[in-house]
Image (tube, rainbow, N blue to C red; front, side, top):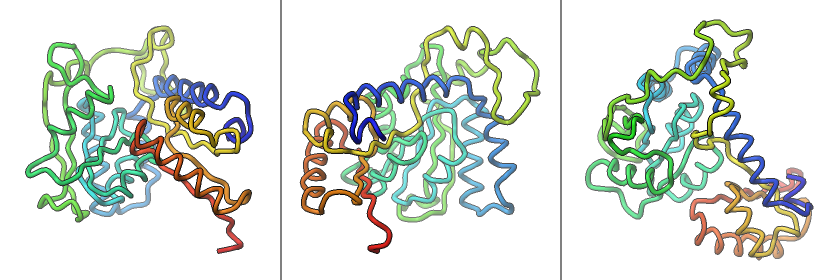
Length: 279
């Protein structure tokens, strides 16, 4: 925040933040994290949260490559993100506001469609995942190609009653039993500790960064070139601080950001932080 607000190396700072988050994800035990989240969630669960958490559990158990959600509702996406699947979450939606909100949720990528497909959106999801380098989904590459698909019961994207199914688009659980740890025990010291082997530390990180980066934009980052560099470095959300400046100045910056985002990352979001006492 400080570097993008008034620093000399904003794009470098964002790039370093992204690499730190990506490397940190490599040492997380998704099953232990899921159990921790379920244990401390008040019971009984709503039916929607129960369905979404079960979908995440299925994805973890089978080593799925993706979780796909077809909806125009915020709630199912938020519940799936809450339970932190190990794989990317792709949201197929025709709602522009939901697509922008996905930039603030862990592990979520929005696939904004002009219109709802006649059937399922899995073909579009597969192409989007390959184009965004979120999953290869190619047979014979020794990696899991299973997708957990979450959609409404009757196919209406405006409804929040959801079901999930598992789809195999290539190799079934090809890397499900690959060992990554030198420690075979089940016990760790705390919920936040993890089993990390020398192999995990030394080998290249393949994980997709799921942590989102929000940048407070100061005057040094208001020009077109710097905005483009920040988007290229991994910025997901531009934050504008309305405690400083005026509405006309912020409006010009917002228009410029939207123009650049349309070319580089159409789903990048803008967060307007207004002064509470005025509201």
